[in-house]
Length: 466
Image (cartoon, rainbow, N blue to C red; front, top):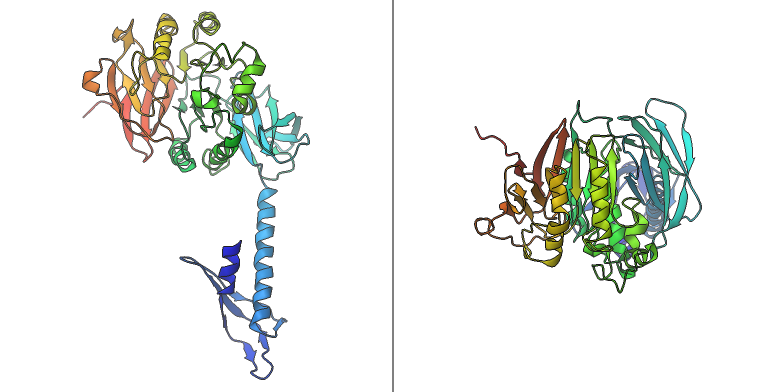
């Protein structure tokens, strides 16, 4: 505010014709004036500002009038913007994404709000109410509404409560047989807001059906003092993961060590109940409807994709109940075309020690289950780099095995990777920020890896060279 006032004090007025200046009275009658506001490197100008009936007795009154006008316009513009859209928006799913959607929006108001929605092309708005709960450690509130019984592959318009702006989302197609499904996948998303936004903008160029972020979203560590980081994460996603025509891209998240105070599960902290998890990971369990409690879950898209979001020892142990659940749920999905697991700590790291305890636990408990159920690709994070392994089965290179990709460098400072020639399981490893575009069509899976500059840095199966 001080800078703006200082700038106004230094402004210059040039009186253009017609105008009358009297040295005796110091009165200027302005029919047309030109003014400029000079700052350090920028000029704000508005030509031919017309006040045919105004009398300014001196330039001091002139300045006062302009100041009042300037702040009046500023106030009105801020009011219009604040009344036009919520503070944040997040779309995700807890049930079949072909026919449902779960919608969160954030405001400064504790009162329950209504959601207005309609299928595109229809005139009448339908109304749905939801619930409201506090945003942890913030003066904001989260409004959540779930819609069901929607048509697959359809577009639905949305309006949030009192806000006028109209958005839309698409339900997922009923099948991947006739059209490709595009999913942007990565993790470790925000050391700095501008890093997250830069990768998000590259994601938007590919217009994915949805985004998966496999943990370490805002690096808030469950800390009340880090609430502004979480605000920034939601603000960045609203600004850069909504298309120009206002399509909201849904986001599915998983848990990482930086969602949890202390980073990792221990029996001393977690007794296995939801209250403990909410205490140590307050943002994660309050702000993301999925995966919800206990911190891992599965999401089925029709019968063509089953997405497993797992917890690599952050609010649940890897071994035991979670592994038992994984075995049971995989057995139920033998007829699904695509089984895609996403989790935080890598089984086959590109930066950290291969013999790390949690990496070893993933290889011992989960990888044999993935192999048994014909998983083709597993998505890993945590190491702040990019990697793709050779196909691996029973801990050896095998062309019929699983390819492990990722290692989490969406919006973070990257680390030095292992020497590929000296690391038996690594096919490729790079210290680059990136996201992975997974394309599903029929029974085929294709990976394209795009860095923060928009360059393709890897593909699998590899593109043929001509």
